[in-house]
Image (cartoon, rainbow, N blue to C red; front, side):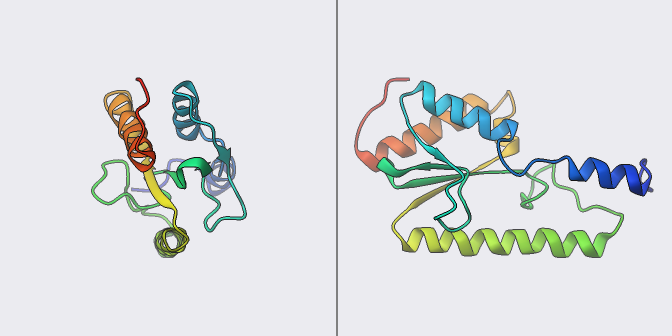
Length: 146
């Protein structure tokens, strides 16, 4: 199937996609803040520049887009038909970089949590956010009231 947009329109649309402060990140951050968790955003001193860093809990959270980070088995990840070689190389390099950064963080003693964009859709959001809070509480041995 051919692209419904001209190359110029497609290029413009792709250039408007944000790399930080995305809606899914905002959802996670607001939920954590409302539960009393304090964090830093996009800490460049850490491998991979994690979206959310909770230093007290030695935890980094990456909020990944299903397309950009190749969420296997997700109905929202589809290989692009146009410029397929470019996109395959781009997305595969993202996945490889993610794995390297997660390994580095774990070697430094950080717990790494990856949240997928599709897990923050209305039907799964509450469960996903509660799992994050539970993981943080387990790392500290504390209980936060929900």
